[in-house]
Every structure is written in C-alpha cells, then in structure tokens.
Length: 152
Image (tube, rainbow, N blue to C red; front, side, top):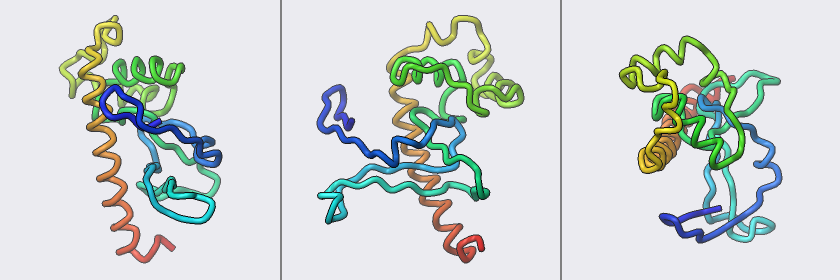
C-alpha cells in the first residue's frame, strides 16, 4: 500500500516479496517502484542485499523503522500497530543493542511505558528516516559489492 501523507494512493500484492520476513537490522532492502514490463505491467519490487548474506541465511527486510533510527520501544509499538506483531528480531532482543539504544536515546528506550507514550508523529518521522536510511544504505552496499567484484 502506497500512501501520500494519510491518503492511500496505491495497493499491490507481490507474492514472492510477501515471503520476506521483518528484521529491525535487515540484511536486504525492498524498493517498490514503477517500471518493468511484461508480467510486471509497470509495477515492480527490487530486493537488494545491504550486506553479505550467507547461503541458507534468511533474507530480512524492515517493515518499519530500523535499528539506530528509533528506540526498541518505538519500533515495537509501530510494528504492533501497523503489522500486528511484537518484534522479537535480533535488533530488538539482543541485550547489547538495548543498552546501546538506551544510551543513544538518553535512557528513554528502557523506561516502562515508553511505547505507550510514543508520539505517533515521531514514529512517522522515524519511519520516513528509516526508509531514507535504508534506501541510502542499499545504494552504498550495492556500490561496495560491485566495486568488490560481486563478493565471489
């Protein structure tokens, strides 16, 4: 579903891409865009690795804000509201990351009830920033991969 502000402007179903699971520290980025021909009929999804992926490793994209763009409590509240699940990914469950989040966000991430007090506008901003950061990270990772000879 594509939105402009609060107004939905498009909706699509990509069967293969719908199999990609969420991770707040994803190893891939999915970009939905116009383009392509044939069966795509002008709509396409491109999935790019943002870091090396080992054989058998699950591909993970972020359904919302990524690690470093919002505290765990805000990311979890956003995913609960938008996708109906409580995130248990490595980015949320790893105690080391929780300590780093708490330090980065001045302890707000560790406060009881932080998710309930999260400002929805701040969450939307984090989502926007996370998407831009993921797009930028995907482009940088792809360039490094190409410069490095494709990792093989």
